[in-house]
Length: 280
Ligand SMILES: C[S@@+](CC[C@H](N)C(=O)[O-])C[C@H]1O[C@@H](n2cnc3c(N)ncnc32)[C@H](O)[C@@H]1O
Image 1 (tube, rainbow, N blue to C red):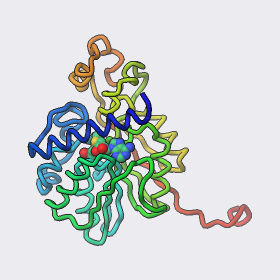
Image 2: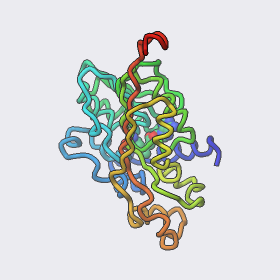
Image 3: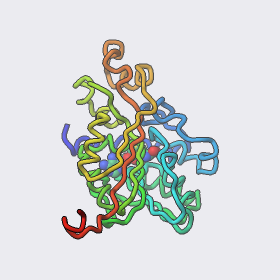
């Protein structure tokens, strides 16, 4: 599996989902990081979803609810990494209000088209969807108060670059509040090598302690990785079966090994100190 082939598989999968939702005006079928599966279901309250365009809800492909992880304030600038159909962007837009701004960043043209249509239907004027990758964020240094993301960083083949870029664009003191799939313990190497499972948010997931270490290496502090929904074999059964694995044989190695996690961190405030003497 090369970086380019993973990226192409991810674009193909999410492009196809966006097209299917745009065409049918509803849910599209594919499991695990598709619609209606145990990873993506029941993440938002009715109060949150009822005022959103139905297609934004139908194409919700996350594994958590990042805007519930922290209190967004009016006037803040928020960036959603891998914004998909825009559900978390539109929810954030309500919190930051007309004086704030929310960017959604995605590399898949069909998703961007669907997200912009959802923005139009929602009448959200404080939102902008950007085309690009999360490994090279098209925003200036120190320009964002909060970074959110929902089940996307696991899809990247260069997570260090994503976290470095997230750190770069955050303002000092800025917050990183992300939902993602994580691994708890050893996962069979065959699963790790499956392109379909990578594109389905499973094979590329980091272990909890790796996530923590990578965030710290990028410069973040106050790092927390908290698994909140742990998947059992039946949660991933249909997805693994479709991908050609014998689930019953793999069961002991899969049971409880994958989880959806809240990942939180902060970019430290700028140190105004001038040298070793004045810090002493
Ligand atoms: C699992 S979906 C999640 C979408 C959205 N966050 C949600 O909760 O519905 C993954 C999205 O991330 C985008 N994506 C994946 N890898 C990306 C990358 N490296 N750079 C930019 N976008 C990426 C895909 O195009 C897709 O829209």
